[in-house]
Amino acid sequence: MEIDDGYKFWIKIDELNPYSTLVELIKNAGLNYGSVKTQRTNNRIPTAQAIYKLAKSLNTTMEYLLANEKDVIDKLYPKNISDIADKLCQLSEQDLYIVKRFVDTLPVQDKGNKAQIS
Image (cartoon, rainbow, N blue to C red; front, side):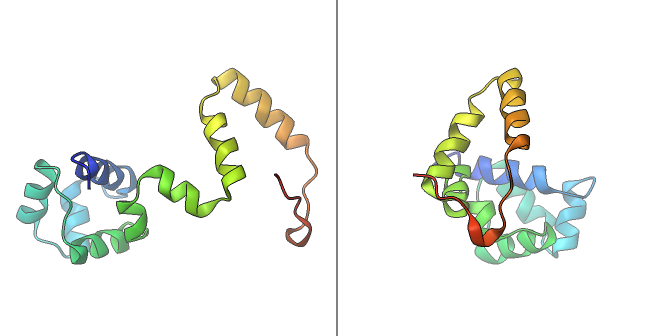
């Protein structure tokens, strides 16, 4: 894992934390505050057991906490959809608004009749 993987891990924890403090999350997960605080301060990824408990308390998966955003998107969507998502992320707010208005006008097909994008 890269050096900043630990940093990214703790950023995800912060983003998903429904509690008002990290202390509450750690208590809810049944983890030792001192150990977790040390890992966080040093941007270290905790043990698999600790990650499992954190993921469960955050109502997410271990895979999500450990994967980078691109890995998660690649697993969720086919390549052609990921390419479109990458381009959408590069648009300005104004252009994204225009695209959204256009997309809202597209006819929605039922799941059994999806168009294939090549």
